[in-house]
Length: 333
Ligand SMILES: [Ca+2]
Ligand SMILES: [Ca+2]
Ligand SMILES: [Ca+2]
Ligand SMILES: [Ca+2]
Image 1 (cartoon, rainbow, N blue to C red):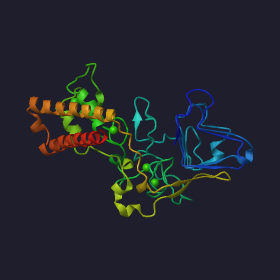
Image 2: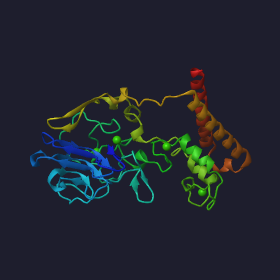
Image 3: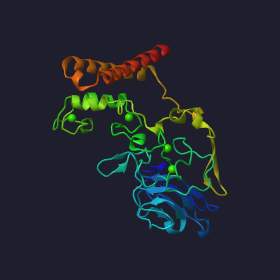
Image 4: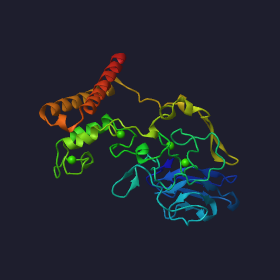
């Protein structure tokens, strides 16, 4: 992923200045840079070959400077390109977009399940390579265009594998972070200034019990995107066979080779937990617990509106989080 380089000035997605050989650039997602996605300066026989990449939503007048996409790009998704060499100029179709212009959420460039980039790359030359999630290339019938390979948790790719409309901060989880937003919008109505339309899940201009029922639905609450799950979670240990190895990012004389550890042994570093951050989270949880207790007591219809088992699971998960945080806090003290 090569994105958001520069706010002003001479910044590009990739700037190739007089390369000594003709490099191959493949499976890059080059988006939202201040100027053109790729700029080339150099001898005409040292131009790059661009494969299976996305070059979109960049600044500048043309997507590539010093390069003609028709002559150097294959199986790519490039703004305003001619549709030759299996390139296309349709929008890449990212799963998480922002209103009103349908631009991607910065930093989350997962392909939507129905993106035209899924399974439309050229699958030659892929051995032991991983995508931006540490998932192996190639899945499905063909490699995907860009840095992401779209995965399903159950071999049948649907929207729910990749995107949940309640994942408001686009981190692949529906959890306390969304609940904090929801509870602060509780019982607000349009056009109340505090109204947060994201929380109006049944689109009737208020945030009430009917919305809470949707919020707590087990299909939404504690939802986790497949790209956020480890391969062990998705497929069990069986699916881990043959993973890991070297990933060649840029081919050519100056090849950059990265050794990528096996996904199962390379979990993301947890955020450093300090006493302060845990205490803050606990306070948030306390607010949430009080909120839930209050609506339980004050709104007798809740037991008819929401399945008691779902409600219990929801409350239990909130208390479990509190217990876990308290344990961590005690360990730090
Ligand atoms: Ca694929
Ligand atoms: Ca992926
Ligand atoms: Ca989230
Ligand atoms: Ca509503």
